[in-house]
Image 1 (cartoon, rainbow, N blue to C red):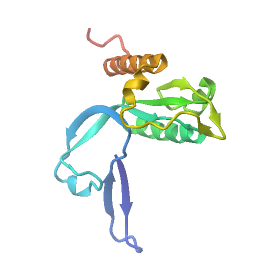
Image 2: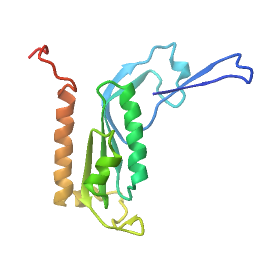
Image 3: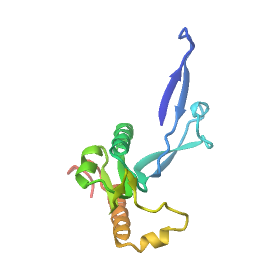
Image 4: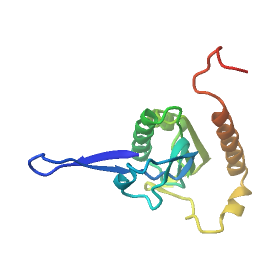
Length: 171
């Protein structure tokens, strides 16, 4: 959720606007929005509840460049500063970035998944565009299947494992 304010040129009034960002995949829980705040929500159809994210997954099919990774890493850092305990993942189907480059440019991601190393020619991926219905054929590729399995395992683990472990936690 982001907050913006606006005032007239003389600064006499303040107009509060609350807005929600859109992410590709969000796992979290819904909370009721107090009726006094609902009029200030600007881009939601249903203003009665909002999602508090636990895990956000930014998904990219291909053609991921360093600028894209750095931009989404910055967004991840900002959102993690707002939502305590948020895990932010980057999921890339295919591309030519090395693990070292992804690590350097994506420092605010908790986890990054680069499912398939592919070549880029002239800055463009050699992967065919995704078409509706391609998922079953993609899942036949071992690297995609293994990546999906690891992603699901990590999601389950991150949802139950506290970010800060202490010996005082009940067993």
